[in-house]
Image (cartoon, rainbow, N blue to C red; front, top):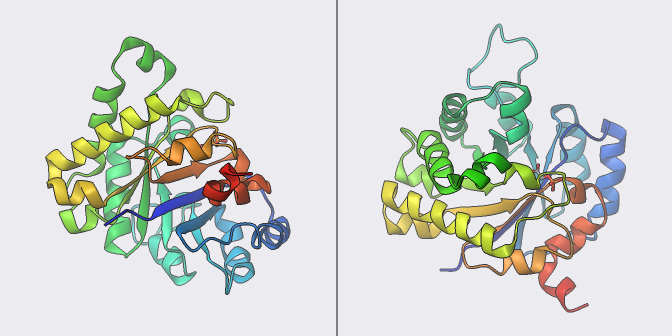
Length: 254
Ligand code: PGA
């Protein structure tokens, strides 16, 4: 069975609650497409207004982060129950900006992934190499290690529900999109790694996104690759372009 594409916006630290409502009003007619799963991952304070604004549409609301403890003295953190209670289904885990600026590690990513599954949330698990690592020729080794640690103690049944986002760090917010060949090669390697861990059935089911400067013009070719099941989109998810990305098949013919 063909995997359903999943196209997610990562709003990062953009949009106030009121801006969130107007952006969703603008985007909702543009992102209609039942052939793909559409997710808007928004800042925590925007989740409730986003949920309200997206009611009755095909837009799913996701979070950008979550803590791995249930509750308690963790000032500033968001718990899995808070997300679930607000109606959230997806949560980005281990984005490279969280790893770089907020000291997240493969180990904390693994704890968050396990916690997300425990609460029925679908993690969008991020991985990706730096430019130095690509130049050193260790991209695949690096990504395989990130994946293996992120999936420690994750069951096969959970793994097939997971979403992985391959985001080369050098391509994020730089306008330097990976070539389709580079993106496909790493997404294939990730699928192979999942196959080694869980078997071919799980590898065939898991969805793997590409992220890093995805635009309306690069999306059609990227998403046509056999191992790329959609995208995690930063900058372009805040603009009407996101509608073209979600409708990449028809946008291609324009
Ligand atoms: P970008 O961000 O599309 O702006 O490069 C992608 C991401 O960080 O998820």
